[in-house]
Length: 125
Length: 108
Image (cartoon, each protein chain N blue to C red):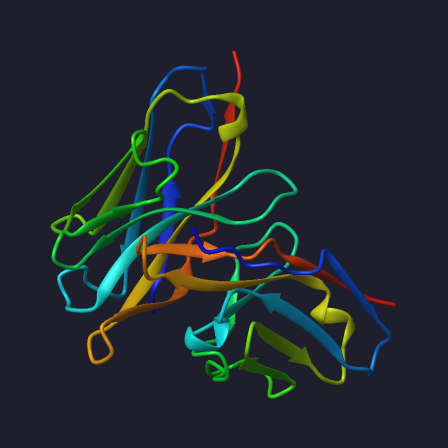
């Protein structure tokens, strides 16, 4: 059974750094083709992909946010951590982590098939 | 960057068919994924590789992809299908995951 759970602060002050942890079970991030993505959703708005870390520790960031993002993994703890610097009110929203698959045969990333329930983060002074 | 365009809303009577479009440049050359998101919940994958259904998803859900438009079709619409639906692709140039703007489906 695959599960993911996001954890982190519910409230962050402007200019501070947000650190979120995704703790997962039911799969291993050392298995070829397995990745984890972070996705966020401002209240009432659309999904926005933030970053991805792959089984081989390769990392990819949203082109528009890459200067503020850092993703890392701890395979011994089955955790993926996302850091976002210089938080602003517009960063308020629900942050999800999701298992992401890479099709080794075709050489392409595919679907986000299991998601955590999300963590609501409010940026306010 | 690659852009996906969806209509903001679709309203259909129960038992009828809802069609949700996702426009993108030569999207037929990409694999398209569709997610259902009910209020307050995480997204759920309902279509992958443009036309395939994960196990547990009713066969009322189907997908197609041609030219510059991918389509999610929900047949025999039920009240429980009310949700936001998002299409998703990967932008090969940036290696970024791209979501559409989302479509709210209302069952009249």
